[in-house]
Length: 216
Image (cartoon, rainbow, N blue to C red; front, side):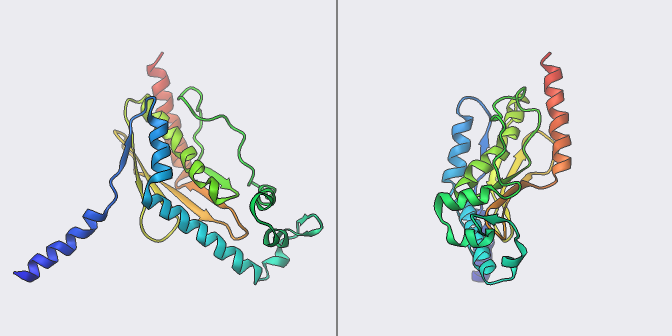
């Protein structure tokens, strides 16, 4: 009998420990709710901090590897990697932003379905301090879409190994949850990206067109 009781308790622990999803249905407070989730959820903060630690490990390994010779770009007369090694703070951000694809996209914020024709599906981030904003940018188009559809999104931090950080479920829509990944790069910086980009671009376009047609 004691064995059965102990077994039931052990099996119940994962369910109790699983983070509760955060639902966002749109409206004036949606952006604040999204910000609170991304900046205050302890499980998500732990995932982002882990990605930042992995970036530091990659940079340390690069200093001891032949990657030094593989980077031919120059910065102030030095090898780019050497410049990264010697730089901190804003100077390091400036060097990383000079790398191909690392400059932030100059696009307006996605505030409503009319002004948001295409969702951002991947972002290059120069510094760990920008990870929270980048996650919000990837979530926002789907939050706006779901508000226009009269539905909501459901956000859950992803636990376990790998780059997956957030699961984004689209309520009342027959689609698998979207997975936002945070991948540290070997020479510094991060890629924040959604899996299945071609599928998601088509899904977003189809549902957005349906909403716009219904509003005419």
